[in-house]
Length: 359
Image (cartoon, rainbow, N blue to C red; front, side, top):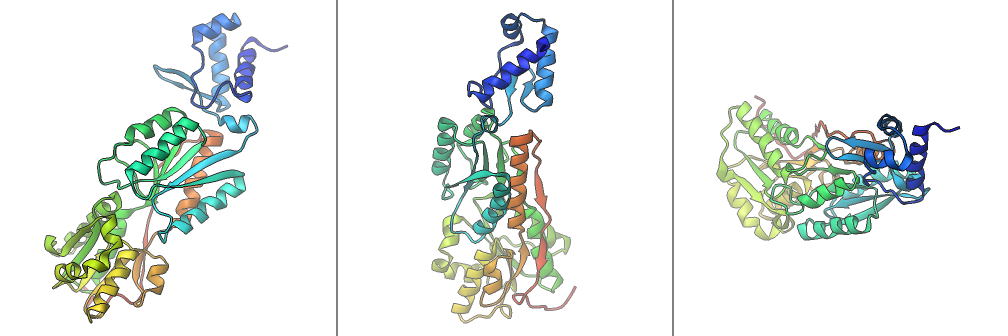
């Protein structure tokens, strides 16, 4: 014979199984459950303890008790996770997806890829679609221009309030208390600039992205290294570009040649920036690394196959993808807490840096 509290446990589980209760739904109040089942408050609380231990519900102080278990899995349906990235054609995209897919295929989860084109309007449209259709069980999101004000913060909060876990990759929004998986971007900028300083360079320029948080963090690391080596930071030798300007760097080649005049080295925001800078210098009849030493960030195929193979800071993007997938599945299936993780980068040396003298 079922104990009184087990009747409540069974009822909640059955409501989830038949689809009357979904993840993020609030359970009836203690008083309502007491009246419905004709039991004491102690019995109701014992049932909630049992459901909490099973990872089916969680109590929120001052708010009530909510369903947290993946209701699709309870009902025998597939688990669908959206991966919302900025661009499909960036060189790190295939490696991130490869890492994510390796985990999802093992766990039997369905991957739904969505592209924002690095536009807040597209990000907003996708988030509204996820909220309206309740079609996904989790979201792995690459932030859109994370250094700029973004009107979509409330939509992310609404998604979380629905019980859909969100995990950021590559960057994050400071306004949201949502964990992220990324490289330590400040350390990446630091390693690139420090290497150039250790090779004897004292006039070190920089090209950084103005509209995303990674660019700001890499710039901060760059300044850390220069100050550590007591090298003057010259604002006129630092170039800030946005996402659109990065794609059309070659059209503004005179700007880069002018701003980096007098520099013997340059830290570039990423390998794409470095690759294009090498092309600009070569087209102008200048040599890398003889006239300018260049360091990129990501250690991508662009670094390896650049006309002058690039020294670059490695970004472990495939491992990043695997880790993000494992964390969000752990949250969905086992209600495990997700925590921020920033991978420690390392420098991969090739042929794009000239040693003037070691300091």
